[in-house]
Image 1 (tube, rainbow, N blue to C red):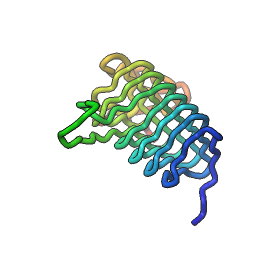
Image 2 (image 1 turned 45 degrees about the horizontal axis):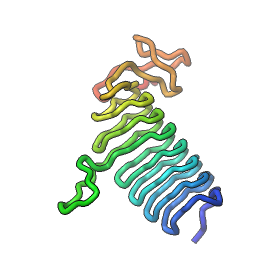
Image 3 (image 1 turned 90 degrees about the vertical axis):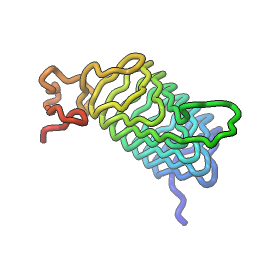
Length: 188
């Protein structure tokens, strides 16, 4: 078995059965449990926690203090700012007698989750969507949408490059889009 080549800070805890891709950097006081999957070329900053059953794609950045729990999938190229929170239990209690129901959450390719934003369980954040800092996501977010507030509501649309699109769904970088049922679609 070939061991992947990644950087691990001396204070990081990486369980033996966690899967970490080549080129990933795991910084101070991070805890990655057995059964967690982290892709290639990720940057997992100080104080992050990745639970068993969580999946982090390739080229993902988790800034300080981000926790990714079981049932959460972050696809490739996702950016999570400091203290972004992902919830996987709609009815949390410290002691349970009933069976726990895991509600899966997916953050699609290229999406950005702002600092201190909360993403509730059972939702999908669309490709290249932007969740503003401090927002609370309670429903699915369309592809390329910019959502803000509590609860988060669509306030505009973003380009793949991250800039806000104008009213004609055009970006200053030259890309343009068409409004579709699931959000925006890039015109190629």
